[in-house]
Image 1 (cartoon, one colour):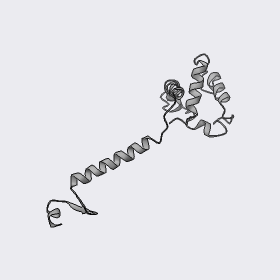
Image 2: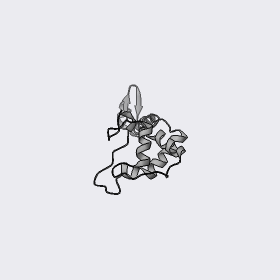
Image 3: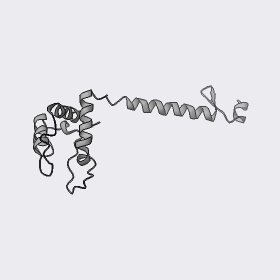
Image 4: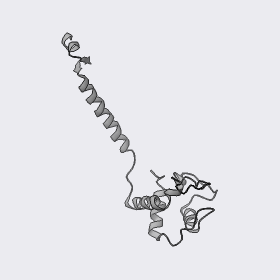
Length: 132
């Protein structure tokens, strides 16, 4: 035990670790914790991934970033299907969300003719994920 203290090592439950060994152990623990949190997010299906892409290029700049500097900030769409109603009070259904997207509402312009039905289905599938 005397030699351990001279070399800067401390016994840990019968195992002597140097400072480098402790640092490596902490690094391994941090990596393990980081990887376990990565696994908590389920992977997107191909349809949801397509919907995410559509959301990112056609929706996020208003509904998340507001890079158009709109005075009235559009509603956050995270978890939009977690509630019975939309921010407007309308029912939170696929049909109603699709209607709002295609017809527009308030300051939101109409997106009629800008989505094929398969793209609309993909966007709705992504919105159902809660926007991970």
